[in-house]
Image: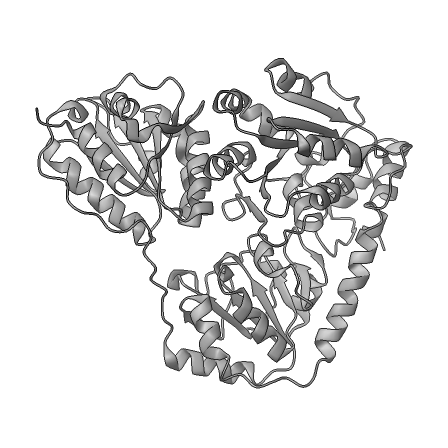
Length: 560
């Protein structure tokens, strides 16, 4: 008996070594999913409740393992809910194949066609070639592909034989132009005050970047996605710049004579210098000069460029700039540590404190998945990945409420590693039914929820949504989680925080810790000036006298 198209797809994907499937719970009412469920080779399935959560989980699995992951995202119209998740996967070029079923008479979802590569199989003879082409595209590093198939076509007899496919990982570093590298070395040798700004593209090139920084006496700043690469064990690290900036990085970037962007398409133009002495190195030529005026753009793999530069760059003897930025950085760190050292129960629990405690007690190979908003800011400033630890989140697309499904994907990819999802209360409520996924799949995920962050509803530009003096609402994420069968606890006091966090991390099953933190802790960007036209001025000048005191006293390090 000849195989069906669905069976043919199962064989192709299984022969490539991919036997982990992210899918939707209870979704087996079509031929494609019936076939995957029937195949013994696909017994490793992570079944989530929502389409966007399945895509986010699969994308995180692909990001951590570097291998292609397969996700079934359901049928139309449920596919429309995957748009934001697919956009996040596209930004990171995750090796992700998303499968979907299109009922007869329906058209391609217009909202998804502009996000990623979308293909629709309408005849049996198209099934094998289009799947093979999608796999080649993903393996070549072009990002995720959404491959759709007509519902009736999946059950038709397959046409053609299964051909061999490419390896699951294709290493193809982009070699830079030799003339561009020589010109870059010449420019680097001309300036005394050089600063490196490192992003996600520096992964795998840490040693070369730090050797160049030492030779040039260049302070090293980083973006959120570059934090886990160059921050730890780096004496030249000066923190982050941008809206979530901290340390001496904002000052170093603006005061430098030459800025080198390594593997980052940094888009906060107001935090970049305007002198035009900027070099950008990126493996994506389209990213060069997209957000800042460049003196030189080098298209190539960051590691390759750095290795070719090392013999061409001279040792910088003047370390005055690096020393000054290092001293400023240490002063800024000391100023920011005041809330970390405070454990006075007379005042509300500070988000800075609990973030630092989690950082200190997490395992050496822990994976952090962070929601957008205030949790991302506190983690940027008080979470410091070291060794094999990973810090992941929607740092490039800015997608919020994604930490919980990403944590599920990370735990499915590495069941033995500790995975911590740092969420807002809204992020957990958005994916509340995914707590059932944790119970059904027996995944041990640690969920930290920042609750009562009034400033989560406040835009960083000030806006009109200032926090109001209102009592805490009756909703408790911990109580909801406990009612669903997940071990949950709430913490309000600083005094017992170390014991509570240690016990929470030691739980063998999934556990949730809801931290009721100070709602007056402002996630302010660096170097804020409180002027009359500023949104922060309006923020401080609203509310009661007690509210004014809490805002100013709790954030006094910003008002100087």
